[in-house]
Length: 171
Image (cartoon, rainbow, N blue to C red; front, side):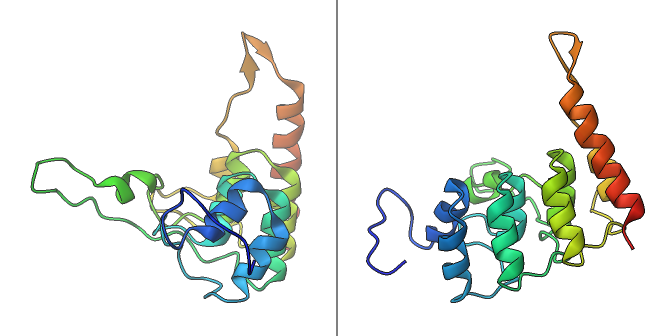
C-alpha cells in the first residue's frame, strides 16, 4: 500500500478502491490498519465486508474474513435528513442504498453468489439475522432476475438452489 499514488479519489477511500477493483491483498493490508468492523469513510453506513459483498468481490470478502472481519456486523440503519434546500438526502446519503441492518450474507444471497455465501457461512455468518426491512438472507436469495428476454437462465436457478441448500444445511 505504501508508495501507491491515488488520484481522483476523495481522501480516505483507498480501501474502497481496493474493494471495487477486487484487489484482495490490498484490502487485507488496509484492514490491518483499520477497525475491522467499522464503517467506510465514503460509504459511511457500510462495513468493508458488506461493501465487498455488495460489489460481488468474492476474493476480497474471503480476504476480509481472514483478516478478522465479523460477518454478522450489519450496515448501519441510516436516517434521511432534510437539507436546507428541501432535498431529502445529501451526496453521502445517496451513496448508501441499503435500508440498514443488512449483512454481507444478505448481499451475497441477493447477488446469487454461492461461493461467497459458503465463505461467509463457514466464517460464522448467521443466516437468521433480520434486516430493517424484516427480511432474512433467504428472503434476499429470492430476489433477482431469472429470465433474460423471456428465457430462463439455468445458471441462476442453479446458484439459487445452491444458496438455499447452504442456508438450510448450515449449522
